Amino acid sequence: MSPVDQESTLRPSLRTGAAVPCEVCDIASGSLIFVKKGYRLVRCSQCGLVYVENRPSEAELSKFYNDDSYHAELVEDSTSASEWHKRTAAKQFQFLRRFKKGGRILDVGCSVGFFLRIAKENGWEPHGVEQSTRSAHYANYKWKLNVVNSTLENANLPAGFFDAITLWDVIEHLPSPVATLRRIAELLKDDGVLIFATPNIDGLFPRLSYRVAGLMNYWPHPTPPGHLFQFSKKSIRSVLNKAGFDPVAIEDDRIAIGYSFGMESLKRAAYSALFVPVAVAGPLFKAGDKMTVAAIKRGTSGQIQQA
Image 1 (cartoon, rainbow, N blue to C red):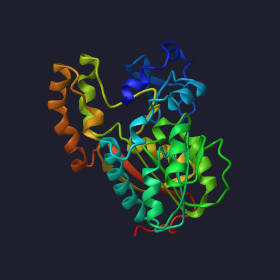
Image 2 (cartoon, rainbow, N blue to C red):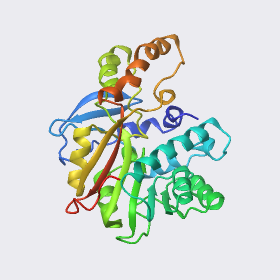
Image 3 (cartoon, rainbow, N blue to C red):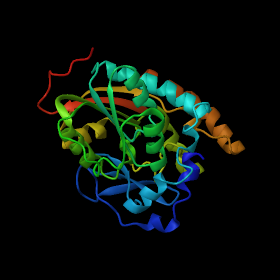
């Protein structure tokens, strides 16, 4: 089941939830930019952070991630989805190696463990947290990856224990990215590194496609309620700063074409023909619709050097 199909299983009543303030500014001053599946995406008038204002409850999000269909296609090695995740994990690992060569690693939202498997094969001591019970079980009993079935906040993990902590396409799912990043800062060693990837709402494709989103009532870049936040390079710096991190690298990438575009109708086929080239070209202009980030705890500058 696709992410769009999964999101539609949440009850419509969730979409009338109370408005939440901006993570960075702590004020409810957002202006509405788009409504998707009943979820209101707003942009903070002060820092520009985009987020779902009327978000689901913690209990409903837990139910969403433990639905039988969630990541069901990833528990078989032979599926096309599994093969794509393996290739992606290999690319992610090469990014990590620029900043850390080994040690203890924690992958937050590790799913069935594609990235941790590569880390383990390359000498890292793997640890993970995963909210999906089935995914965590698979990672533990199939690959022996030390995965805790929990959110990071509820996991009993030792402070100052990890050399690297990763969140691959996870930070945009978090109810409170700042709170989670502060917890990550506690878990990292002083010379540890935080690595993550997330969509970039200021990428070339999101910016240009937004110009026609209102006319077509179609904008594939945001995917609520799975994605509760949409970051730009500017706003991710603000979030990192508030959580006590300094970014050392923010690099452009792009979301998989198959994830962003569909061919369910002639209208969407035409839309894809128009915007697929834009999405592909984005990183060439330092405006990809996805970014990969490395950061260190504030006050430790100089202890992490790119390899």
